[in-house]
Length: 201
Image (cartoon, rainbow, N blue to C red; front, side, top):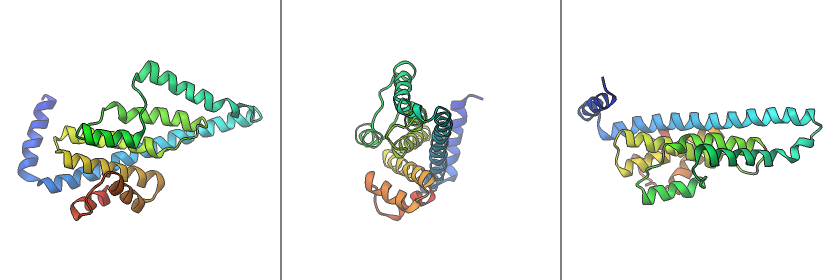
C-alpha cells in the first residue's frame, strides 16, 4: 500500500478518535524522546572522538594537541564544502528566524549536519559547546515531524520548544532549566496548555 494512502488513513482515524490536544501531548512526548536521543548521540560521538584523540596525544607525548583543533576545523570545512554544501548557521538565531519568517519550517538536513560538524569541532578541541547543535538537531526533528502530521504554526512552535527542552534535559540533566529556556527563548505562553507538553518532553 502506498505511503500517502497509509498517512491519509491515519489522519482520518486520528481526527475521529484523538483530539487535537491529546495528539499534541503525544507528539510532545515523541519529540522529547527523539530530541533527547539526538542530543545523547551527539554527546557520545563527541566523547568517543575526544577519548580516541586523547590516547593518541598521550602516545605522541602531547605534541599533537596543537594541531588537533585546526585539523577538526579543516574536516568540518571539507564536509561543508563538498558533502553537505550548506552554510553552517548559529543554532538559536537560525531557529528564531525560521519561526518568524518561515512558520517554523526547518530543512531536513539540519537534523544530521549538527551531529557531524559539532563532534568534529568539539571532539578535536575546538572552543565551542554542544548546546546549540543539540537544540538545532532536535528542533529540525520536531519541525519535520510537525510538517509530516500537518500541525499548525502555533503547535509547531510549541513542538520546537519541546525539542529544545528534551535536548537540554537529556544532555545536561537539568529539566527545570530546560523548560525555562524553552519558554524564554521561544516566547511560549506560560499556560497549562504549553507547560504540560514541555513537561512531557
